[in-house]
Image 1 (cartoon, one colour):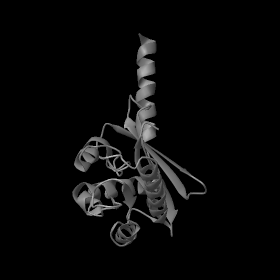
Image 2 (tube, one colour):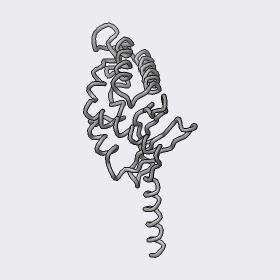
Image 3 (cartoon, rainbow, N blue to C red):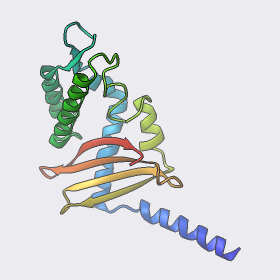
Image 4 (spheres, one colour):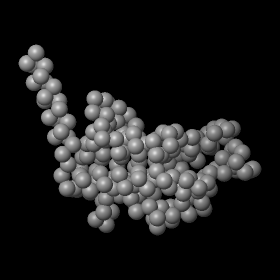
Length: 188
């Protein structure tokens, strides 16, 4: 029985220590929290950009990426979404190129591949749900690893008892400020 109490105490202590963040980790966490607070009420602004279109007819396969709209989308991010940086835009370019390859490989696919879920939350849930159930949920454990000479950070968010099921967000420092480079991905 004493061993069980000792073991339980160690688990609680390790969780408390994992939640103690240094100043740089708190800055990283704040960027993530601020972005998802903004996103939970402004998600439609990012999804108003129709990044794909029908090659021959509007909204009918085969699809192609509309690169003019994509460039407008990137400009919007640069001007209006300070938590997302140039590394995020480059990752979005890669994503769109992968979508174009999928469109070419599966030209008859009705649902445009890559656009059937929220890329910023990696779910089909409402952004407000992700904010309340993951980002702001006090029961979640935040693990923030800062590396590469204080220029890259990886954030893992999980339920304390389910650390194998976690969300991952990557950030890089651009011009001295932490910026999200890749948004939430699950179970990594």
